[in-house]
Length: 236
Length: 295
Image (spheres, rainbow over the protein chains, first blue to last red):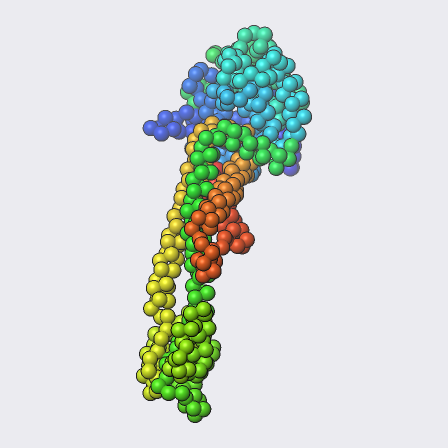
């Protein structure tokens, strides 16, 4: 009797037995395997140095895995080069832990960069930037140089840049790390809206408050290994 | 927002942020171009002068006596046997006298009382104006002097040789300055672009991370190269033209001008210099950006 396998959900991110070793034999990730489905929002938790940031860097091709397979949107990351890599990156918004903002540019210019590379019209860019700054409580910072913003404000600008181009994948590395409760709520509302609009979201965080209330999947990493997959973490 | 608009915006931003370095590069390209095109201008004028002088080159073989028809045919045969020539003219004593008189102009009265046959008859040989034929002029001259009935052969050979040596030296200078121009331009443009890249490394890295294609990153820098080449060569040629006018006004007298017609570069020469400059500057940009986008 033939067993019929029906695929109900489509994976957006697939990580299969991935190891990342840095020089001097420092293993940041050890045979990690995980899948994030299309349209899913999940959290990656773990202590500092557990390997969360490394995993996000591998997912956005900032670094290459030492061993194992990483597929994002059906494309093998290790093999992606040139135009195909650029196209995938345009579909992917990343809020970096170190922000990667250009301090001599304004908040609006920093956010616009991710839309300019996909040749959006100036008016569309302006409207989108204004809307995002407004949603994140930074409406008055449109023309402020990011070098003059506080850490929390810079963090929100980074997130705005990550989602400005309406990407299908959003990776956030501690997106609420420097924020107060009100700002955290704004950020999470924005991410939740993106998720409702169809974006797949993976957030690396220490902040329990952002996932404790929800029903999203929580993945825990400890010492470069994926410890558990549960609705709620065991420990932080 | 289309590609062109975006890259032009990027270009404007690049130029605004690194205007100091950009001006230095432009000056370097301009000076390199000026040095090269100055030597090239001298070279083209020397070549033109050489062509004009070559047109006047002829061998004059003075004969012992007025040649009869038979001797004329023999001499013609002997001359053609040695090399192809453009013209062979026999000058009688009277014709020589008349020419001399015409050359003396107002002073022709000094010939009063002189017999009209005191000058030797001669044969004028106009060689074919090609390098191969002109190079054989010396051999031709000694060949003619060995023919019986020829007293002496006169040619501007020595002068022509000295002139050719000078023009060869100028050719070497033009080639050397051209090579230096190529190296300087590529090096300077590549160096400027590298400085710009270093100054904007974070931005370019970020552009890559947000999905900018290589052409999106590279094109503004290529346009910078084109601008350097176009502006540098245009300003360089403009400066050369000013220099040319100054030289023409201060160092040429009407008498000198009739012998040496000092002319500026033709439109093709200028177009070639501008296009080469654009090509070299763009090559410099491309080479540097290639390393960055692949790195």
